[in-house]
Image (cartoon, rainbow, N blue to C red; front, side, top):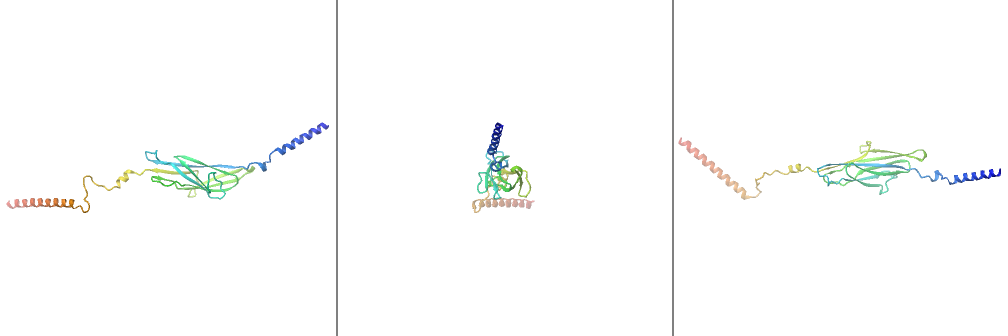
Length: 219
C-alpha cells in the first residue's frame, strides 16, 4: 500500500516537472511572420542588328509611402534601389511583415536618359493588406495599381533601344549635284567668266540673225 502511494507521488512529481519544462507558447513562441516576394519584371526590346553593345541595365527604386512599412535590409531612408539586367528578366524584393496593417509603396524606374534609349517612366502603387487570423497567423494581400489607378496583375517595365535611321539622316542633308560648283559670294572670277560666255553667245546670235537677214534681202 505504501509502495503504491510512493509510486503515485513519483508519477505526480514527474508530471509536474514536465509541465514546468514545457515552453509557454504565449510568452516564448516566435511571432508569426508573413513573407511576401514582390516580383518586378523588365522587358527590353532592341531594334538593331548589332545588340552586343546595348546596355540593358534598368535602375529601379522602391519607396515606402507608409512610415511603418517594412523594407528590405539594404534600404536607406525608406528607399530601396536595385538593378535589372536584360530582356524578360525579373528581380524579387523580399518583404517581411510581423504585424497586421496596411502598408503602401511606390515603385518606379530611375534609369538616366540616354540617346536611342526609351525608358518606361510609369510608376506603380503597391498596397499590402496584412490581416490577423487565428493562432497568430498573418494573411497578406497585395494590390498593384498603375498611374491610371487600374489594377495590374504584375509589375513590369518596358524599355526600348531604337537606333536612329541613317537613311533619314542622309535625306536631311541639302542636295548638291556632283560636278557643279556653286559660286560663292564675292567670287568675281566665276562671275566674269559667265559674263564673257554670255556676251560671246549674244554676239554669235546677232551674227547669225544678220546673215539670215541679208540672205532674205537678196532673194
